[in-house]
Length: 564
Ligand SMILES: [Zn+2]
Image 1: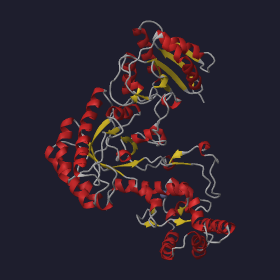
Image 2: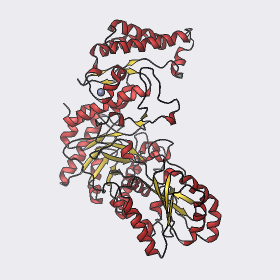
Image 3: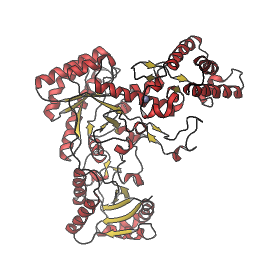
Image 4: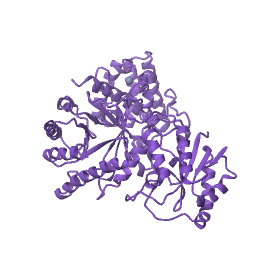
């Protein structure tokens, strides 16, 4: 379906000279780009707006395409050289955009106008006249398209602990058929997959989603990078819609420092991080950091602590220079409790009112407690309200302590992932008791096949027992089979795929408890209501991750009510 209004702007000699690659809309700094950025500071990116750039160096590229600094002017000759590329790209873009507006200098026009012929644009406009006229046109073009809320400071609740769920790109089939164990479409790209948080709507599972900019360099995730002329670089991904966020939930970005921990320097530059947070409409954005993990030599750890602090300074300066709207969060790394605490005044001095504490994942409960205590004491002495986020940790034993000390926020996927990573604590009941999920592995799965290999059991027999186990569980869910018969059917299949006797005995007892308690009947969340007993069956992502999001929803409830 064609929905976009495409705007093409010519590149400008005036550029931001930041190192590395930054989005074209931030790299170019001519008057047209200032008009666009000033509009985007005031309004969220309109849903039908697409922005392309005609660059003397790269030809037609998306406004979000990352580009390095360069110097090259457009000439009639260069425009002719780029003609073929421009024509082909316009043709592709016209399959998604219904209209085209061109705001370019005269040297750029010829290939563009050539390219328009034979494309599917229903409406084409070329801004004419001197530069002032063109800018006026641009400004009106943008204002006519604003369809979203004005950008405002996020309305953060400072009175209670906030919980963020890190995004692991968990996309599921909303129409998965649990009775017949089939996807809505055989091919994954034909399914209408949604993020697991959307399946829980209208229930909320968190105060916001933590998205890592490192997705830019990986082949997956909402922020994954595309080639410069790809149609997906014409507008930011609609992240809030992707995660089903409502107005009181936040998009929090960080740099995903774990993904480059082995590199000498962070792979993301400060300007890159700042411009990505801003263009993608993040509410909060963490400064660039580098983890001083305990396995590095002491001098390297100290270097990383300093580097993180220097990056934080450059980050808030770039944030000011570009007049960004997102809330800057200064990441503090440290080696000892003192090293963390002593840096806080400097961050406050830089202008930060929100800080994030990194590198805690490696530490024990008592170390974390010391670090957090130290920082909170310094904050008290400073007498300034500083919002403190703890990155990547959830320690049940410490949560009430954190609250007491005045920690503001944390992120963790541990309840989500427990659904399939733990052997016997997979489903959190509304009674706050953990239950084991009942394993019925997919027999055609290569890992299951490997376990069966050499057992001498015909595969038809394996499949028969697998079907029988699932049927028994569904009948038990419907109240039509006894617990003993159900358990027998489950274990008969289980015996084939796992032969560890001790583990099996423990699991049999754990399964019995799950079945007897029927915890899925006591939860009225959308997932448990739809799945019934399937939510406690340990089998494939569509069940396991739905169970994970149910756990997360309960964790969020506990966070809001307060830990015991
Ligand atoms: Zn539930």
